[in-house]
Length: 277
Image 1: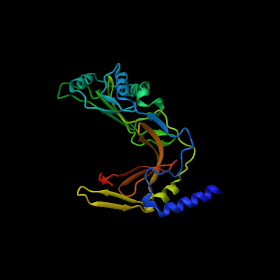
Image 2: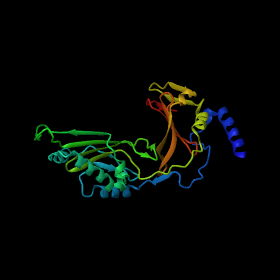
Image 3: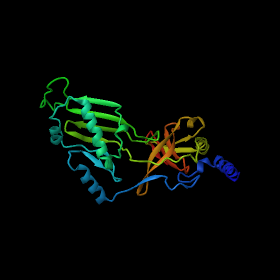
Image 4: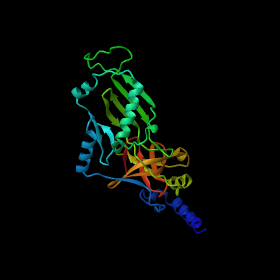
């Protein structure tokens, strides 16, 4: 009964002061010690060491980020890459299997431990002749494999910005793009329901500026919040990367992520790329 009374008071205060609700203000404090799953930022020396460990025994153009995960690839050396494309392949199924095994074997860096989760969404086979230096021996031979494995899902929830794609040749994987994570704790219930989140956000003023310095305002309406979903958002909080379970809303051309446990507004951004207030 006390909790219900407190919640009614809270909703009344929110309805009166939506525009003043701080992004970092908590509706609830975290009482579950398992939440959120967190990864500590590496020191520059640790990151360099991780990169060395990852590169061992392979030719790769992928980089380890400051939290120890691979997920980005740099522009590679032309001659080194060309050498990888000399060998042609025809057994695509076998190469796809080897790619999956590679991602799992490098699980400490890719975050992947279960190959059954790696289901190709798009497969691209190409033959790159490098200006006529290589000749395709027949139409079933290729020297480049690209795979889109889609986004990571944990307990049915998509991990934001986790699209996993790879580039490989008969010599192995040489580019990995996309962040996957080895684990994420999902609280058994939401302290902040989608209905409460909507009440918090309705009437909130979103402010940004265009390239001419003109102020652009949008007041969030109830209808703005009809399009929403629950998602895992990788949130950088100081020296930690936290996997937060959030409600994602897209009012107008904005994007908002609100933690379903604390009620914090973790991200509030104008997707048109305007300057924020």
